[in-house]
Image (cartoon, rainbow, N blue to C red; front, side, top):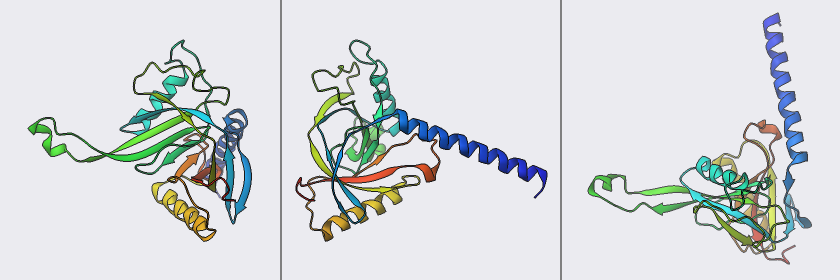
Length: 227
């Protein structure tokens, strides 16, 4: 190995070490939604989550949705309060409702774009939307949470619930999430555990986190006595 290659490998190793250290620091300092594991089925955990409040929005892109909600927790609210960010980020399938409490939760769905003028008729088609929610820290209930000043951000209570959760790593691409979701639902079907909602996924790490260090999950609400 020549000197240039050795230096390059050393730099890459240093970057990876810094990224890993930052990931661990982020996880240690970021509050996550509390839950109790009430059962296991193969590699699926059954978790009981307490009630929570989410700030949510619907936007054309994830960046737009995230920007609105990040604005809310950093002062775009009555009183200009700062609200701690929690983890994870949750992403659900088209046409489903958001559930989860630490997080940011995202729902993708389809909507009809109305025809406004003949010029726009060619662009009239189904379009993806993103529904995203930040789950507020547990000290907030619906009355105590700061009211958003952005009319596109809403507050919503999430009831206590039991989730079946399967964990996986690497980047949560659509294909990878879909495969993990199928495995989750197949496991629950074999165990005859009834589901009560639509599946969604959750991510706990910043976008720059190294793929092999990422913590991702797919989840679905199930009957409380499913375990």
